Length: 493
Image 1: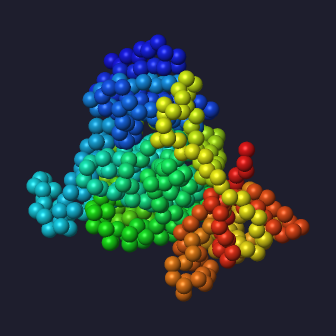
Image 2 (image 1 turned 90 degrees about the vertical axis):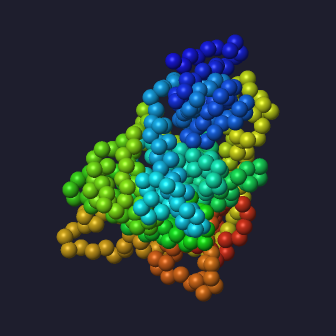
Image 3 (image 1 turned 135 degrees about the vertical axis):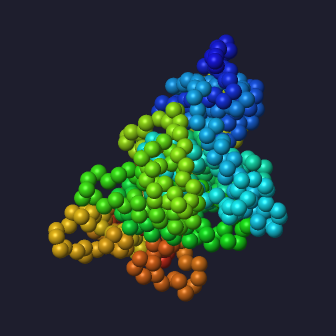
């Protein structure tokens, strides 16, 4: 049984954790927590904690410190906390070992080496391409992080491709995106504003060497039901790019792909009149990323459904949901979205708990302050687009025989002078320039195939002088560029 004891120092406690137990905590708004390992070995979502080093957590972070052999940890200013010896980590570790065997066999085949002996001898040596499904608040992202972190910690030089298809998650940039990146170092956990780490485009110089360069596409909304046809297209475009990226990298291809998904993929439609887009989107993921393993987190009905649909083509496994998963309400998610947008432009600094100096922490857990650029540009410098109508009823709600005048994926040019443009305080995605000169002219839906090079916030509009003020992570010119608006808004506090 784990025992907590006071150390005699202000705001400091120690927990002695037994083997295969975890210390779980939840932080309130405006509080932070510092943890360090005094003895033994511990990890957070699969990322190992170095001995003696302080790790900071803040911004309503909810996480757990797990140990396989037992350890003693010290923390300052804990919030809600408890220790549990009932964890799903053995099941997750078994999944990791099975995926590791697939990686080794796939790489051995590519190099012409003899395959390791075992019951899989007659199975085609494919690398693991994993789709993780589960309902809301089931811990899907935690499972994806643990499997990714265990892969990069295996000592084999793996760099699994982590794919985020959940636009509400935020991933490496801002909410409203789908993205992918090869991961070469464990993904840390300090704040829900950076659930998968920082992108190099918005990371300060002290972290840029460890930051990631994700391939990002802009969906623009937190909910899949807003535009499922657009989501389907973006998933398939992202899959094409991931496949192309891995074709020239045998080690990366053997490392495999791990795909995180929205909770709506596991939810049945609310009424018989609502189309069940989730099956279409699950199929899009299976096809786009060539999935050969489906993990279902804590949902028996979904597990049966996936086995019935895909069980004859691939492995479908139900894995347990952690008892430490926290129910997150709508207000919490809205606060985190606002924090993610603020962090993208201004960086993130977690203040150490009272009694712990910044010098004791070092710079490892400080994302630091960023200095975004504010520019005043004329209306005509940027072309603003919206995909589909601003408010579009589902097709099932249209009168019988009626057809749309604007489809869900049609780009609509916005006039900044129009009272209904909605550009003020809008988050807009700056599309990347075409790779080839002949692609400079893009028509209609072809703009959807362009990835995002960065995100901008429109902070002021001067209608009389036809100028607007744009906040961007770094200075640059926007002449002739195209930006796409979604439904996210943000203003500086």
